[in-house]
Length: 229
Image 1 (cartoon, rainbow, N blue to C red):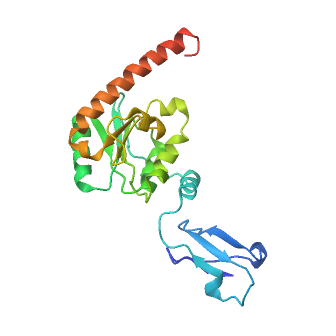
Image 2 (image 1 turned 120 degrees about the vertical axis):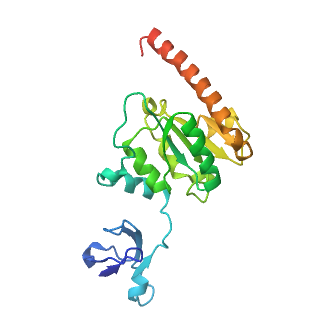
Image 3 (image 1 turned 180 degrees about the horizontal axis):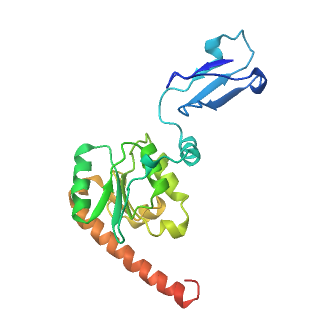
């Protein structure tokens, strides 16, 4: 079967023996990884257009996106920094609104962070694959139609705990009040910041980071005393 990807227009062949009959199957484009749908159900005469039903060119679902990032080959351009000296703090700012992003850029620079501003979730995940950021500030709707299906939050939930403890994640939202600890716990972030308080984000971040640092200093001391640190 000849298949044409609707996203990159690449052409490739699939042996008929490798395509299950009477099923709807999904295959990734070998060039751009766009997901294509093959419908081989024989309820009516099939045409070429019936067999090849490309998924609309939107962002893939979270699971497919995370899998494609994890399986991707090494690309030096995905590394967010060429070189960083010891003690340099890094931040990832995930925000689509240019006015808010400008505020974040100014605040993070004032706080001494070297900041990366990814244009979408795919780029953010690629950067996070090669670098553990000290601070991540993100809007819960960044490159996501639903705040409960954000691929970056999904990725962070799967990060190993020793690595995750060294990251501070701030979530910008319109659903929860600023510094709502229960909401932060529920979303697996360190602090939530309501959009109406965005002008105070510098003060909020400094306070929340200081409290988090003090907590983990006590936590580490407890581990050492119990012989687990």
